[in-house]
Image 1 (cartoon, rainbow, N blue to C red):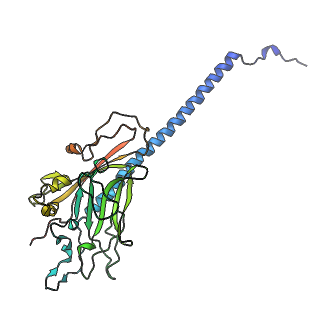
Image 2: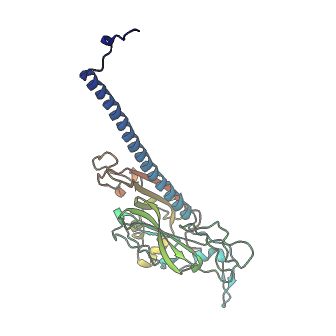
Image 3: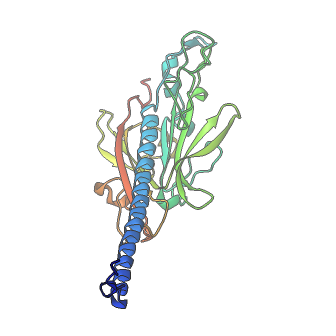
Length: 321
């Protein structure tokens, strides 16, 4: 029987063991760092996607509602007792010039808006981060046939609720839909873009959050002073109303609006996720509107801006007498 050569069998030395442990530890640390980095990258990407989604959705809703401003459904005309005829398709144009509720487009600069009631706020009432308010009104549209109370789904308010057309018997301004846009803080102090609308079932105004993280909402208006259909300048709501010589003439100035430029700033949900930069200056309406700049705090949140222009499809001006 052959006896094994025990002189050639040996274990690891202490130095070799320490080296192996050190190498193994480095591998574990590298894998851990990669895993943590991947999680941080995934979270950052999810936050960035959330910001972009909020901006896209908010812009989609606002743009769609603004395009409907002043729309008139062609309901049957009707005759008054004195023999005069009300043209249903122009019912939204026959409001008194000094009646703000008769306007299809109206807003307020740097305004806070109550969650209930039909007010769109007042100028310089300390809107969230100087945000503006915007109110849009338009007639809905009903299905052909029936009693005229069932909407056909083509005209919706800011909550996506389909709006029926005006009363076939006697169309009136009160038949128009309401859509308000404004920024307010949720219970956790996170800013959100809100939609205020009129609930037909409860016969009251309600506000619902549309897009989370929208901390700035700014609006300027394309002002056509000479009525040729081409705007001469852009004005915010306060500047536009300042064009009126009296309170009674404010409505006439609003009817000279032919387009809107809307800007928003959205932020990520968490702070400390992004490098803390020096306080940067953002321009929700673009650098051409430097007066509407916004300087957010250096809180480590990702921020993005969105700017778009909507030209009004329907006439806002008063009818010829």
